[in-house]
Length: 510
Figure (cartoon, rainbow, N blue to C red):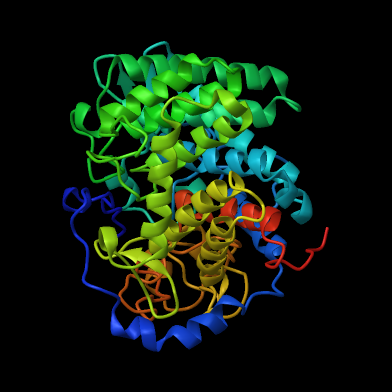
């Protein structure tokens, strides 16, 4: 049975301690092989991978599918939900607003800041389509000024079903909906949604101006609610299964939301608000940019300090001499984050012999963390001078991590792409044969490849410490499940590499 185990930053990992002594010997012995791996994808079609990554999001769509649906084996499903639409979270059929927001944010962000990459791959319209699909859902989840739908579908009920989404039994025609109110704090959830909608408003404005205005108004309202009622959504809601995306922090999401509201509105009040959230989280005033408290270098739906800080530096770059409050602290923090991710040992971060960066405490979705770090480093690189040595090093780091997912080690971790891709991913719909053949737990138990190709889906990847700790088995949901948040960093990083790295990419087909 599928379980979504809570994968968030462990308390023991937050702090300046936890450093290992030196570089493991196997890293040194694998150096020559790693160098070969770094250049192995120089002629690969990064644009093809980006197109596949967007196609995955179409396969995850819920609700009434449009006529131009490009995934023929997916049909309309769960149209009776309290809020129809949105994306299914992973290989199952729940819809979670936290991960939907984080994924939509990364897709919108990369489209806004790396438009040349999307244009090179011919993916601009698909980026807008997917962001709008998600943003429409996130807006509709705001039922009233202080009522927000954070989750649709009971995970226990959902995990007892294996089959096509349109065939899932739904008692009474409507699945359970978890609704947060002013009495149930949800600053982490609302902050993430606010950031997503603010970024979506900027991307959608040239094409859908009325939608964009609604996105932005909702983003502002949710941020004000979140800032007034700080707290964690999974802890405030009685009966909510905290293992399902329960987060550790909310100041990072509020900081992120404030930064995006500034970008969308130009209102400098949000810059001061973002700095207050930074200080509340443990950031310290002063030009040396010291940081501590709950601030950490990990990047996921649980921890967004890195992305928030780099967005504020991007704003500072555009503001020129005016800068932003806390700018030097953000710069020092991101320098530290880059050093931590590029070197082994600190903050429990290691790398496999072939170069995948992962945290020793994580066994779940390690390719997701590496892709998120790659995207963040590319955003940081964009704020540095074009001839900067640091810029080149950050781009190289991102390229190695993305190349690993694409197959630089001899196997791809992206379904339907590259050499030896996954064929038995933990995804109920993809495991089902074409109707009228029945689909149920017998498909889960078979060792045969999935009848449907879930093109573009990134699997969780090796659990560590070695590169051989991945298993292409359907029942291995730790290393072989897929998720909308797994794909977000990869999709965004691919756009960034196409835009920033002149050595990485052969010109893809248009």
